[in-house]
Every structure is written in structure tokens, then in C-alpha cells.
Image (cartoon, rainbow, N blue to C red; front, side, top):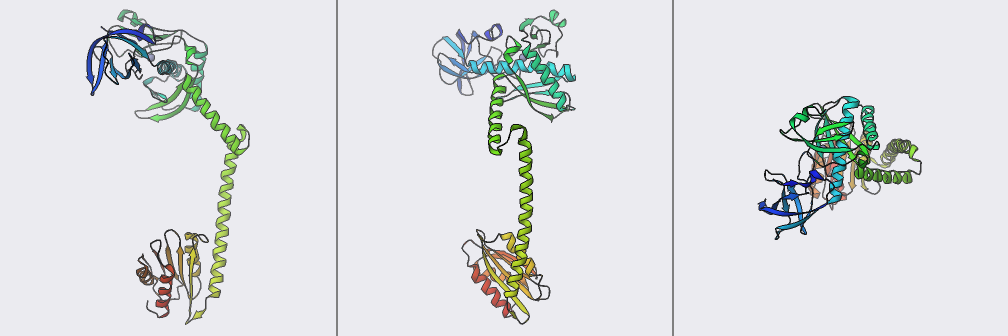
Length: 401
Ligand SMILES: [Zn+2]
């Protein structure tokens, strides 16, 4: 029977042990030791990492024989000195002990039971058997949990037999039979758990709920941070807030208002820009129409726009404007990254813009077509649009369409 030192003393960081067995796990060397402080993955808690005689322990998995220490390389000696990654372990102990406190706090404030727990690399989650959780309810559970942290209550872990177990006010019935490991937070919570925990609630430092969302099966998934993780999150958010305060040159309290005001100004500026663009298009249409000479009842407006001067959308709006004027045919080109042609005509003109567009596009290796009164085409980046427009005008004058 392997002696699991993390049960006797979860604060043990180094230990001596003997190799009981060597094996291979997924092509990597692994050992089973007669005693170990390495916690294997289980109960929602990730495994410890560290080293044995300087060889990195990259994973620790439970097995019937005891924890399997999976190694980065071969371990030659039978007598080993092990060292666990203490920062990682302490972080896990903070998250895990915080979870016990938070789970009991949800029972006491909301009557919500924890149905599962996951300790993640960045945040941890518990799933609660309720979906009707308001922000106030979450805040009440968080407040109670932090009160228990500040009360510095002792946390005691021990194995109890079935007889004693029956008398304990366990939060949930144990998942295993026989002797069960029980974690008691003095005067607050009692639950069966095989993980590693702190010796007092004060060491959790801080419990912060960061998110709550509906989850499958009528549960709510609550994401939380404890201790060092909560502090790091506070630090990150504080920095972000300071950057925003600097950006908006305002106080923290006025930040939201400043952001809302900016969004409103952007909306207003866009609206004003749209009005101005519409006026510009209308004025340009009037000018171009007036300048176009009338010939056989036709006024042909042929213009090639540069992308720096006009947006492609404005050119189309201009074509629409021109098509509203008697006898007008608009042959417009836009020489942007993706060159475009837009042809449009007034209702009193008989020429077919779709045919005219196909003809123009053929000349320059583009593609296009459309209805008799409106057509569009596109061409390769270096296409001679002026040539296409000239061909279209010539065909139009010769009444070829
Ligand atoms: Zn636990």
C-alpha cells in the first residue's frame, strides 16, 4: 500500500521514497513509489508537478497500485528525493478549499447544491442545481463565503469509518465505500473529499465569483477565483481600468458615462456624414447632368472616379440619382482595389444597360450584367476602365443596344 503523504501533511513539499515499480505510460517512463507527496489528478483537482531526483514529473495519474508518476526522462536510482511544485499545489489548495466554502455558502443563502466541481488552469467552476440565480443572490453567497474566510476557521481533514460517518452532517453522501476522508471547516461545512486543502480558511485569502451562466440539465455554472488568482485578476482589472481612465481622461465613476457618450457621438457623426454624403451626391448629380450635352434626346454622363475621392457606395447612389433625370444615362466607373462599373438609365431611355454592361466588360476581361435600367460589373485590378466606358458610350450613340 502506497503511503500518500499529501493526506498526512498537504504542506509537505519534499520527501524521500523508494521506487516500487517502473512502467511505461503512453510511451513515457513512469514510476510507482512506496510513499509520495505528489497528488494524482482526481476529484476535480489537477495533479501535482515537480521532480524526482531532478527528473521532471509531467503528470501524475491514479491507479490501483498507487499514483503513477509520469516522467520526462529515465529515472536510474531506486532511492529518490521528490520535490513538488509548491506554487502550483498551494494555488490548487486555495481554489479547492475556497470551493468547499463557496458550495456551503450557496446552500445556506440559496439552498443550492453543488453537483460538480472543476479546478481549471485559469478559473474554477461549480455547477449548482438551480437556474433562478439573481445577481443579488450570487453576491449574498460570495459575501458569506468571504466572511468565513475572514473568520479564520480551522480546516481539518481525516479518515472516518462508516459508523462515525453516519453521525457527521455531510454536505453530500460520499461517492466511495469504506473509510472515507472527510474535510471539516469548523462550524460551517463538512464534506467527503480526497483532495488537498489548506489548514485554515484565512489562507484562501479572497473568493470572487466572476461569472454565472445557465448550464445544461437545469444547472447554473458559477466561475470563481480564489487567493492568488483573485488578486491577479484584481491587478489585471485595475490596470485595465487605469488605462481606460487615462484614455477617457475621466474618473472611474464617470467611465461608463464617458463610453456611452462617445458611442452616442459616433452614432450622431455617422448620421451627419450620411446626410452630407447624400447632399454631395445630389449636388454632383445635378452638376454632371447640367454639363452633359443633349444629343438625340440622350444625356450621357460618363465619369471615372478615383477611390481616393469617392466611395464605391456613393458612386452607386450617384447612378441612382442620375437615372431619375429625363433622358439620362449614367456610365460610371470606380477605379478602386476592385474596379467597378455601374450603368443606369432614366425610364424614358430605351437602351439596355445589362447588354451594354456585358459588352463593356468583355472589352476589359471583367464580368457583369443586370436589368435593362440598371447594371453592374467588376474587373481585374489593372483593367482599363476608361476604355470600357468609351466602348459603352460608342455603342450607346450608335444605338447598338
Ligand atoms: Zn475538497
